[in-house]
Image (cartoon, rainbow, N blue to C red; front, side):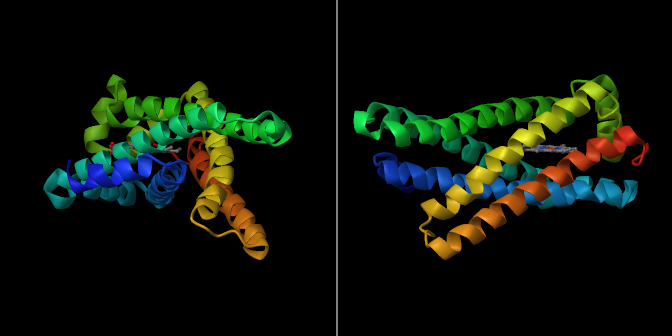
Amino acid sequence: MNAITRCLATYWSSSIGKKLIVALTGLVLVGFLAGHLSGNLLMYVGREAFNEYAHFLHTMLHGAGVWIARVVLLAMLVLHVAATISLTRQNRAARQPYEFKNTLQASKSSRIMIVSGLTILAFVVFHILHYTVRVDADLAKLGATDPYGMVIVGFKSPLVVMFYIISMSLLCSHLTHGVASIFQTLGVRSKKAQSSIKLFSQAYSFAIWAGFISIPISVLAGLLKF
Ligand code: HEM
């Protein structure tokens, strides 16, 4: 067993360890979203800026950079989902009758997290087929030379735009609860800090939601043009 597997096995054996895995992997994914959004907002700067950025992503570290990022992101996603499933099972098995009221409250919020989490997973699969694999022949042609044009053409369908808006809205709900939970798991629990954390989580999630949905909406409204 190498050091990373040994370290993971130690964390996996306790529920605190698994919560830490969910929080730390969540933190990396939250950071990715901020980075991805910043890059996507270059659509508003113009075709040249966005295409240069896309070219940089694909050529950094002689093309290895994008693959390193993909492997790290996939590992984070798998660990995040697997630790969440394991924790949910563990909590269900340990449920006591006198905890009924608290459990109802907790299971309602965790049910929302599971539904929003599963929608985000389905969205990510669709999104990768849409813009990375480019199963649509028109997008595949444009993707190689003009990623800006590819994004515009990709949002020509109101149905696709609607799916993005619904997914981003569930992502926002997932983040509002998730970002606050990261702080709590990492030990920031004081009453004073709690209200600031809640405010920060809501502001961060709103910024991510508004930034991401603004792009398909701007394409559909004709503000971002081919
Ligand atoms: C309107 C919103 C979004 C737009 C316009 C957008 C745009 C793009 C584009 C153009 C790519 C392809 C990059 C390339 O291969 O050149 C991409 C990849 C990707 N996006 Fe998004 N994205 C959006 C929202 C999101 C969200 C909300 C998530 C996560 C929940 C996400 C996760 C990813 C992932 C994981 C990849 C694959 C990276 C790769 O393997 O190449 N995106 N996105």
